[in-house]
Amino acid sequence: MTLRTNVAFPPPLPAGKQPDPRTARRTFIRVLVWAIPGVVIALAVMAGYALAYPERMPEAVGELVEDLTGANPHPVHLVRPDTAPLSSVALLGRELFNDPSLSASGKQSCASCHSAQHAYGPPDDLSVQLGGPHMTDAGYRPPPSLTYLYRQAPFSIGPDAGDADVVVNLDQAAAAAQGVQRAVKTAGAAPAAPAMVPQGGLFWDGRADSLQRQAIGPLLNPVEMANRDVNEVVQKLSTGKYRDTFSKLFGPAIFDHPDLLASEAMFAIGRYQVEDPSFHEFSSKYDYWLEGRAHLTQAELRGLRLFNDKDKANCAGCHVSQVSRDGLPPLFTDQQYEALGAPRNKALPVNKDPKFYDMGVCGPFRHDIATQTQYCGMFLTPTLRNAAERHVFFHNGVYHDLKQVMNFYNLRNTSPEKIYPRDASGKVMKYDDIPAKYVANIDVADAPFDRKAGDQPAMTDAEMDDIIAFMKTLDDGYKAQ
Image 1: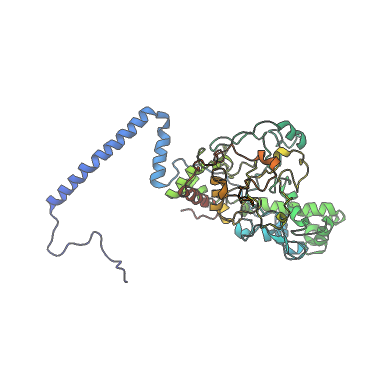
Image 2 (image 1 turned 90 degrees about the vertical axis):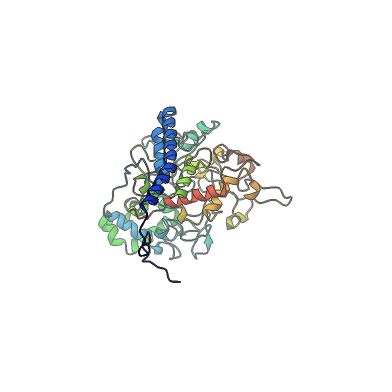
């Protein structure tokens, strides 16, 4: 079929035919007769609304503009991190980050599990990555994204623990909070009181307090880069291609102090993550919408409102979507910890042992507050930026797409039989990845988890699709108009 592309609009009249002015006039009058009442009614409604709710009028007008155009009626200025050429230390860190020779197998680098092409997260949909001396050992948890960590606070418990000048005993802080009811997290409100739950830190359990300390973890993990100890890492740094660089940056005496050499190498990796803008681009469609430089579709707008609706999805209760008071873009995390009760991932080799449970903050990989069992089953709330780029979700990698994640939130309490397996007798094994004695730690207060079995789910399928459409606007790399 050939499409005509040169058709004039409106099409020309046949030769000899001229428009009848009387017919045109009558048509115009009819349009006015039909249109004017509608305009009058709309103006009357707006006037009545303004008289009844004057404080809501600006917001209502903004929502009307937003609905009609998809534009943000209240654009803001976002304060992004400064950009500059990478320092010599950061350039060294970039080389170390991408060097597989630092692993026991010679095949795995930091970038292997934190791919720049996948928002510094895993490059595939495996629940956990393979590593070890022969690249055959399965990990325990999926690697979280390394993006947007430049503002991550150190791990703490209590409102004063973020003060770098205050030395806090975590056991004492946790004990002081024990028995105090946790604050309900509500979208649109300030983050819940941090005294009730842990906050900050790196890894799923927050056991590292800096990018420097985080970097050494995979190098020594037996199922990841699998070096036997720090000395083996130092040996590779001392005899490899980095020797001249380390000498120039830190002086030749650095090789007389192996621990210091390792520390400076990890510091370099941390500096790379802080200085390179690819780790915190803030170049998503949502960022540009906030600034008035992009328009959201109707589905994305509906998803944004559901995301922020405290009675529906309530996503923003933990994944904060508001710009900070000083103009910093939202990170889409409150940096706190939650026990969600995700179903057990039977595909993980470590879970073949029925007695093994990953308890997050209280073990098995961190031990300093293992006795504070009120935190068992809690894991760090990750950023949702670039979440649509991921193919593995939650601390055990049990889900592999956003619709599965949304179904979990929507149905965990209302229809648990659709989320959890059944035992031999047919009973639903709700919360099957946490020992029964810690089930009380699981969040049942925050929407949408505040519903009970048989209740109407918080969201319809169409609403969940809209939320996913909005979440896709959080992916970096959008080209603003």
